[in-house]
Image 1 (cartoon, rainbow, N blue to C red):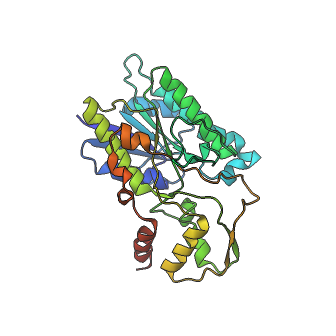
Image 2: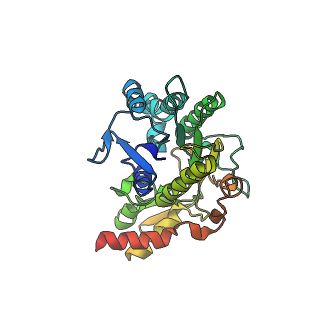
Image 3: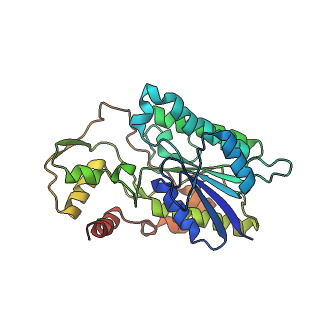
Length: 320
């Protein structure tokens, strides 16, 4: 039995990593969706046009939809002029997809894997990290839009859907442009001689999109094998995160060392910046993944790509 999977936001850093990983999964037929950055191997579709989206999904009849498309930039989401659009993309659309996932007459439905964020929390993580059952308490518009999306998705799950929320932290990995992630863009900061202030306050757990993509393939494989069906039953909320922590200033020092550049133009900030309110420490607990799902290999940090090692290899390729 083959599994058909649709990936939204397949031209983005996470969506493209998931799309490429699923292409290597022999039991899978994957369709990637993109809108602003289409390519020959992706289907161009404006997923905010929900009528066209519904027609497409009912034509394709996927077993899974992995929803990566979102406005991920807190500074953009915070601007009042963007509030309506951010709500449509980050909050309303996931609920629409969750509704479409429900089985109906002559429609089997699908499992929705909705990508969310650690920013649904306020940054006061307990020593063991936030559990999936901890109450959300976002600090800014971006986190609020994603928390509202989770609420809508999980409410529909309670009414018979198969939706799953996957929370992830800040991302890094292969990109078209450094600005595609809040971590890769630090390469530009280091390479510039322009004076810059850099956050040395908030603790982050940057996770490579290739690790997330590999995990999702394992998730789909395990669900398939356990239930002998393309979807299978999964917990409502999952967390996936690298265990290693850094500040953005820490990462700048690492990148400067790799690039052989000075970091004298970068000044560490030890207090919260006077911009969008960002949480201090949103460490996520992976208890459900390692214990409930039995993927105990993720208790070992060697199961995750090391940030410095990966950037060393990536930047060597970029400059060769």
